[in-house]
Each structure stands twice: as structure tokens, then as C-alpha cells.
Length: 280
Image 1 (cartoon, helix red, strand yellow):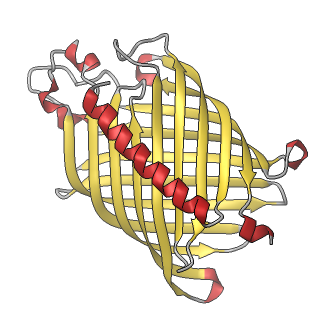
Image 2 (cartoon, rainbow, N blue to C red):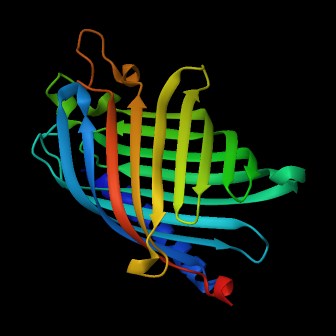
Image 3 (tube, helix red, strand yellow):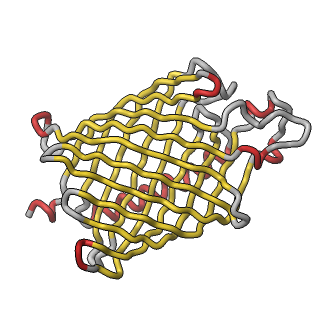
């Protein structure tokens, strides 16, 4: 993990801290979680267990804009060493703000969202992944079902860690790809009874030449466990990311990595601290 990665991480964490502090001043809802995870890279039969922590804040401004920020950090038990020089700590961030500008009948709405996502130093050799996406959103906000579809044009950056590619004849000169890109994303959440929540997410990125960049799918559920503490939940999720690594290829050399995707399982215990505004 080089100094530029550390600088980028520090900048993101500073932005996150500022957002969290701002949210706290407005009596936001906080969520904390501890859990275990497993990252699987099936192309090379690799599995990496670990533990992780999560912090999240969610609020609505006085002007009605919804804002949120989340930070996840993971500690790996790295035995496969896909990255020969992997530091077994990696993290993800998610920052965003959204609002509705039209509400129709039958719980339909139109709105906008601006979201920043990052993924750093994974065991699957993602050195840095950064997405910035302003998008339009069309959705349905029912009591038992919530669904949305969004599309926009933003910024996509992906850097492959140089250690594994170096063993395949690559140097650092072609391991970063930065481009303006379009993205389409869909989300759905089902509320089942008083305790269960099932969710799914799909996201696809393509560049200005309609060349595919990457795809992400997420599915999971949360179960309320108030007997263990007010607002507590047990959560489980599965996330898969697939990347177009042909963009990094050098003629005459093998593919930059021996894999092009990863699968991430996570189970955690979550505690929610409700907004004081909501409890009044």
C-alpha cells in the first residue's frame, strides 16, 4: 500500500469525519456493527476470513435532503497471499446525499442522488477503487416494498495493486484506469413481517465508448433482534464484483491477474441508535 493510497485514504476519512460530525449536530441516526467476513476468489480457489467493523450515520437536513455516510474496516487472516505484499487491513467508504423533486400517487417519486464510494487494499488486489456518481432516480417507496432505478454519468477509477502483476511481467505504468463513465443501478428492499428485511442491489458501469468496466451485485437480509438490545439486528450479505481487466492488458503478456472477480460474504451484529428527533 503506497503513500498515494494512504493520502487518498486520509482524505476520504477526513471527509467522512466531517460528514459524521455534521450529521451528529442534526440528531442523526447512528448504526454500528461488528462481524466476520470471507472473501472468495474462486478462479484461484482462494478464501480469506476476517473480522470487521462498521459505522454509519443517516440524517435529513432541515431543507429535506437525505444524507448518509458509512465506513467499514476489515482485518484479514491472509493465508493465500494473492498479493505477495498484502497488508491485511482494508476498508470501504460510502458518502451520499439525495432528495426528491416530484412525488406522485401510489408512492412513486423522482429524485436525484450524488454518491461517493471507495474500496481500498483488498486481498483480491484492488489497490484503489473510487466512484463518484451524480444520478437521477425513479423509485417506489411503499411500507413493505421499496425499489429504485437510477442512472447517471460520473467518475470511475480503478487501480490494480502492482505486486501480483509484477510476477506476470507488468510494471506500474498501466495499472490505473481513470475515466468518465455511465452507471445504472437498481435497489429493492422487502419488509417481511415485523422483523425481516431482505434487500438486493445491482450496478453496472460502462465508459463513453460503451465498453464494460465493472459490475456489482449485492443481496442479503437483516433480522431485528430487540431482545439483545433496542434497535439491534443480525445482518447477512453476499457481494460480488467483476472487473474488465482486459483494459490493463499488455500484448505478449498474460492477463494482469489470474482472476477478474471476487465474492464477499459478511455476517454481523448491528446496533442502531435512533435519532432523538424520531423518538420525540
